[in-house]
Length: 229
Image (cartoon, rainbow, N blue to C red; front, side, top):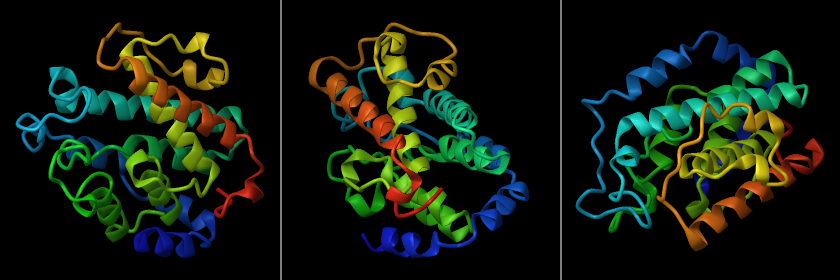
């Protein structure tokens, strides 16, 4: 993917400059403005997203995704703190969690007939690039989407995949305490568990496997990733 190659090359920039960018960018305001209920409508009602969207109103509205992104952001910040990341890098991990699914409802990748280039998370990645967001943060957002089948370029990318899937499983009603390999910092960020039947069988299994693989990869040395974030 050309965009990913460009971002990988640009990610060699001094990460301190990237963290300074977040200090002057109102990420929280950006997040709130983007999730404007008047702007978002579920694009998948006519052609339901595979497996679950269209079956449950809460997943097809901005409230679910606002909550999901906020939970993933808390998981990411907790995980960064547990792993001893710097305060600036914790802000970066938090921002990745907060922003990672902002364009899903507007451009769902699992809507029938939608091209990959115009679906989540490509529009978000391009927009963040245009606004000057750090390249390795955008890389993590690109790589968290399983349909793109991209390898993890950084520990932050691995963390985002794991936290994203963990938050999804928690929304499905899974007790993450019973799943070996989920960091305690991630579990601590879950506000409460809600029983749901949105995903069963193979899909739930695949989410668990991807989550655990990401958390396992997270424990690899930073030098094993193309981007040392």
